[in-house]
Structures are given as structure tokens and as C-alpha cells.
Length: 316
Image (tube, rainbow, N blue to C red; front, side, top):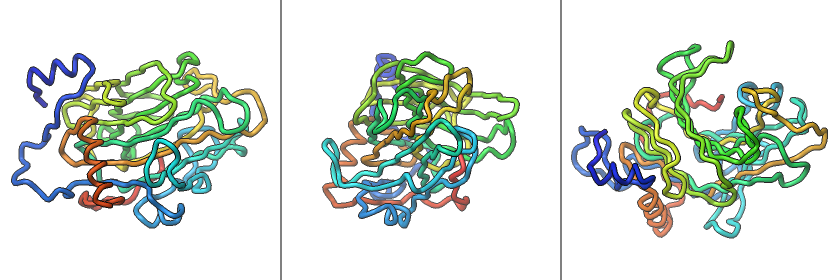
């Protein structure tokens, strides 16, 4: 991907370039909704959410605390609180430090997303809604493909992860992590990725934007560049689009893991909206303008991204 000199200056300054079409083969202008996915989470209940393209993870296993459940029980929808419009989706995850006492939460959309703009407006929390504070909890927005085999080079994953209590072997300071994965294997743990860590307090509402091409993956929070990763790790195969909320297992990657308390605690993450625009790079202002236009047109749920003929995936 080649950027103009002005765009490069903006990137170096931590700002966003203007929108760019990533595919040179794109021809005549398509209808406004072609290649667009948007969900305002304007649902009466979680059942309506699941009836409209979303799936809750129920498969146990990596990541998180061994033996923990992944369940739809932690997914709910609500009227918009202050700072949001229409409705929100909420993930609520609980733990007492044990596998049997832990429920992680994840929602997934179809495996058909690759290049273009991914964006979401989310509400992160630094403290639990009840119980003792201090767990290494991971609050996310990401896209991912299945791993066909350990260290398979066709694996693809792009992540936003907010860690309010530290983790991944770092100190206890809150930070936003962005990671682009080429591949990995669990045993023995081997990773091939590029990541960026930006310390700071990200509690509250934030607009997250990923610009994904075969040449680079760039991550923005509220218009500020927080990660810039190379073609060596950029996605190669379609991914599902996901949110999850889980707890770091004790000792994982040098981390502290769950705090030493048997008392139950709950963390929550809210989602105001999510957007994908296929094969186009939009900056944060353009994303927010598109969301406003969709809302003004009472288009609260649009899915015009072509199906790729791939099975739904909600296992990682």
C-alpha cells in the first residue's frame, strides 16, 4: 500500500490518513451498502441478537482459565446508557479464580471479513461491577480465523485488547495492546506476531478502528495511532469478527493471573455499535460519519458483506 507524502506525515504524527480504496481492481461505484456490515445492537433481548447473525461461544478451551465455561449466559442487551444511542450489547464475565467458578464471554459474527475497515465503539471498565479488583482481565475487539495446524502460515488474527490490570508478562499498569498474528502453536507455546503496547487508562467509551490490508495493519483509538504492523503478519484468509471478555490464567506468559481470593467478581464490557467496510480504509471521522448516516436512515442492522462459503467460527 502506497500512501501520499501527506498521508505518511499524518501516520508519523500518529494521525489518520483519509480514506483509501485498497483494491486496485475495484471498478464502478457500488451501492452505498455493498460490502458494508453495521450493527447498532438495537435489540429487545439477547435472543434477537442471536437471531440476527451473532453466535455465543460455548466451546471450552484456550484462551483463559483452564476448565472455564464459555456461555451465552453472560450476553445481554440493554437500552442505551449515557454516552450511547439506541441499544447496547453487554458481555459479563465472572470468576472466583478457579476453572469451575469462571465463565468467559464471547460473541462472534460470520467468517467472511478480510481487508478494509473494522470499527467498533466500546465501553471498557477498570474495576469489576462487584467483588475484589485486580484480576488480569482482557477486554477485546478482534477478527480471527481457525488455526488449521500448529504454526500454519495461513492463520490470521488482528486484535484490540485492553488490560486494565496489566498482563502478558508486563507490570500492573493499564494499557491498550494491539497484536497482528502470523501464526502460533500452544504446545510448546510459540508465537509469530507483531504487537504494540500503549500504557494508559482507557476506561469509558472509545472508538476503535483497524485498517487492514495485505501490506499493513494499523490500529487507532479515538483517531490516535496505537499500532502499525507489517505485511509479514497481515491477514491472508477471511476471519470472523468478535468481542470477548476473559481472565488471564495464573502464570500465563509470566503474568500474575487471577488474584488470590475465592470471592466471586464480575467484569463487564459494553458495545454501542460495530462496523465493517470491505476493501476501503476509513479514518475515525469517516467511520463516525457513516454510523451517523446509517442511524439517521434508521438502518440499525445492515449485512451486505458477501458470504465466503465458510463455516461459522466461534472457538477462539
